[in-house]
Image (cartoon, rainbow, N blue to C red; front, top):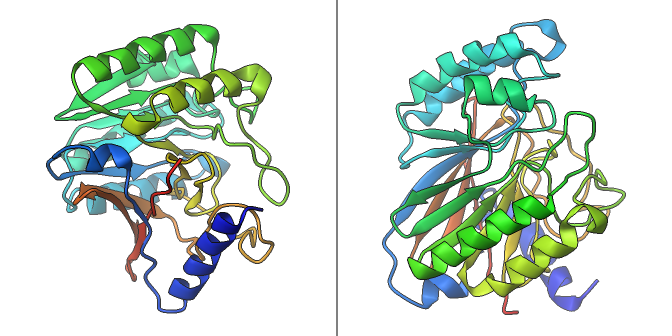
Length: 299
């Protein structure tokens, strides 16, 4: 492990002792020019229908009601809307989405059949969301028959064009996918986009636009807030599931990256201001808010 990664981990452990965890990204792209404040919300892995009972649906309705009370221009859902391909759960998910009162943009997870996703949520699966100075690229990198991630050459070509549009419009870029691109092994899940399945091509493109890229956001892991910052200057973050999370003791096992000790189900408010990105986790149940700021590294 490089010394900077070790220093990052020590910072998180020290801060955890005080409760809230500041984790801030200070992207060079934000410092390069004036950008107005922007807020949105990230939720993921709702898994409606899990265990064939109504528990996930009830928690989703509660979560959606809490999201409606938080500021933010839109909501990103990073996949696994339903569990195990249960198409009958999408209308129940949509009932919760109505409570939010702001636009919600989903990507499919490995539990979401693409045909059902297109029928109930959005016909154009890979899509770009433009909001003020930000371009969010929502990419379907999950398959129903695998926990691994996949980015096809056709998707790389599409993303290339979207990045070029961002340059033309002077927009910053946020990538949103379900499965992490970042290599991870035991004690992590070991699920990611392998080099032969698009990782190499994606990272080459990301590095080409690194000074314009805010971050790469994912769901999938159910490990609370999990992330890496070794592809400087870009952070890669997996967000907490809105249904359940598990403690794999990654900090204690000195796994690369960060994984604060916070494993309640919930959602995350993202605020970009003063040249930084702040992540603020809210549990679906009442409780203390976890604040995390992603510290920017130089490439």
